[in-house]
Image (cartoon, rainbow, N blue to C red; front, side, top):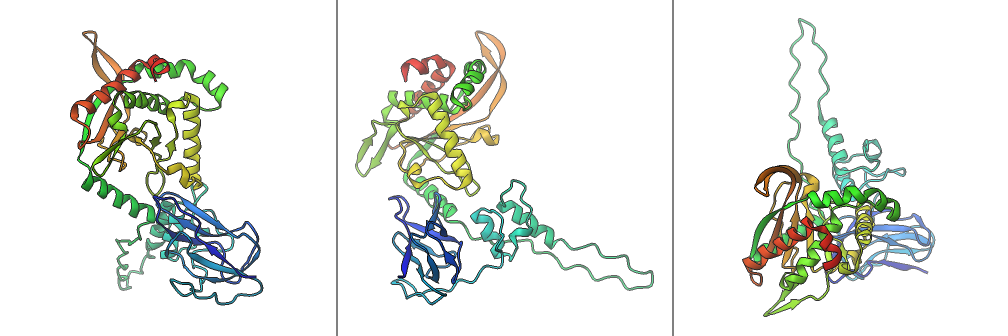
Length: 399
């Protein structure tokens, strides 16, 4: 008996998804539990599987279509391919296999597939340096194919060869749903919040010394490296407890002050940052924080991060230092009213007890919503973070 493939429930912050890839085409046999279609939201990719075996008899939404929760994506039935019944929003669209996809298609990111399809590129011919075809791999392949081959030398009496045609110098690529949503939310934050940024610098000597002393035993005991993230998460929670308005949210004419600490940690992905959340981070140990961040990073790179991991969040930490940034002004993760920016650690001369010394220093930045947070509170918040990082033993007794 035929049954519909539908868009699964989305979160309250995700209203739509985009059809990223059809793994099966009309007429293909589908087994129970097999992935039929992949959806892309602004946060994660979702795989829609078949609940029972059958044959894909119709596709209602082709690649690139925007869909909402509960929408019918396609129809599975028994026997050969047949036209699917018309859905409430649109008629079925037979989906021909894209020119850029083959039966032994290698692993590739959704954005790499879209670029390949737009340029009629066979992904099996694209070298993948990381083992998975990325957007840059496809672009490099396209550029190499467009480069004109060297012309053979003409005989002395021959006329000069005509000049090679000028290769295209522009490329038009449709923004992914994630990039569109990121753009919309950044503009919303700038147009809604009164954002200011204040800076401080932190001497990282003490934290580096702690990590050096305990890195081997920590890794052996917990199976994860002792990084900087756990120190700053703990220090941030200490500062939020001292200045609770930074852990708040504006709702109309009211301020909602959060009595819990769900800390978002920004992680870089190919199509933009995602911010999975450490739930009740004040209850997590150093090892639990490091383990959960590592798991999130692996899930982001593999495209398996669940939407539930991205919901909520009371405050965000972003580390541009991993990309080499020395200083920046992070933008609020609206409706949050504060975000802490971390940066690269650089050895600099500083005055310590009246003498010049070389220390590993990091600039920190707090962007805050001036509608409810005053400059004094913002400065004191960063000073609190600085004090806890420069005296890390206090993280064990005060947070």
